[in-house]
Amino acid sequence: MIPGWSFGIREEDIAAHVEEAREAGADVVVLLSHNGFDVDRKLASRVLGIDVILTGHTHDALPEPVMVGKTLVVASGSNGKFVSRIDLDVRDGKVTDWGYRLIPVFSDVITPDADMAALIDKVRAPYEAELARELATTDELLFRRGNFNGTFDDLICEALLQERNAEIALSPGFRWGTSVLPGTAITVEDLHNAWAMTYPAAYRSTMSGATFKDVLEDVADNLFNVDPYYQQGGDMVRVGGMGYAIDPKAEMGSRISDMTVLATGEPIYPARDYTVAGWASVNEGTEGPAIWDVVESYLTRTGTVSLPDNQSVKVAG
Image (cartoon, rainbow, N blue to C red; front, side):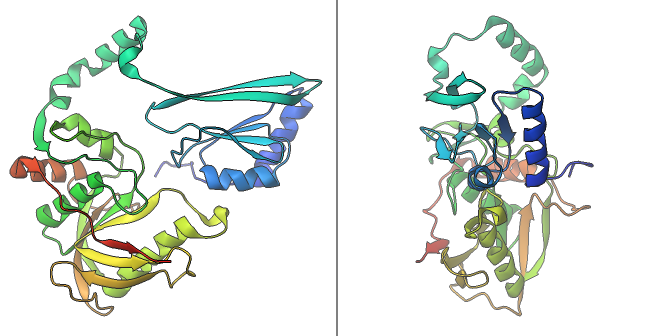
């Protein structure tokens, strides 16, 4: 959604940059990547000359680097939960040894840098009251990180179902965002921690049962394809109002089965159209209220969040 920018693996470009760096006298070559851990693990086996890959996108936190050939692949989590430190012993133009620590960050026992704290306070000041505004309380631990669902995602889907008057809700399997503890208030800042983005429109449309199957199969292949270069990170699309079974080890087109409407227990019929609400569409011109406005409306009307156990997904195989 940013003109002139795109995602890509581009092995030949990377190899050319590695060669240029070495010819310019670099003893150590470090790649800062947003490909994701599995993609970068394969990349390291195919592009020689990289000493360290600092990988992002999939938000993994590895206790130690993964060695692929002579390349160290480092993943340091997300949201400031960890800092990675890697020490390299470089002799005669090459890395001969290394040491590593994944360091957890306990913000309540670290003295903040005074200048940085003052800058943050200054930037936040015009928005502080709005960010602190309480919308509801939660009886649940609201989290996002799960391969098939998370309670924050269940909350989003329930809000879409009710506020957009839909039969089925879809929410992307994003991994970013912080958690909200049980018994605490949900604030405006919590909403933006989970949903702040540049394409937040919550659309409402119709979709056939066959299209639902195609969507789920496509996302599943992005996650479970045996070739990492065909994986795009993230997690399975979240669903509300429907259930399904998935076999991650099956072939493309055969992973998804037993699609049902949870409210009635009826199967989802390929030829029937269903009312669907979702958000974060990458299609140009998508219309609808911002997802944070949809969830705020649901929270203020509900008052207290109490979610049943998610039974939408059954994992087979």
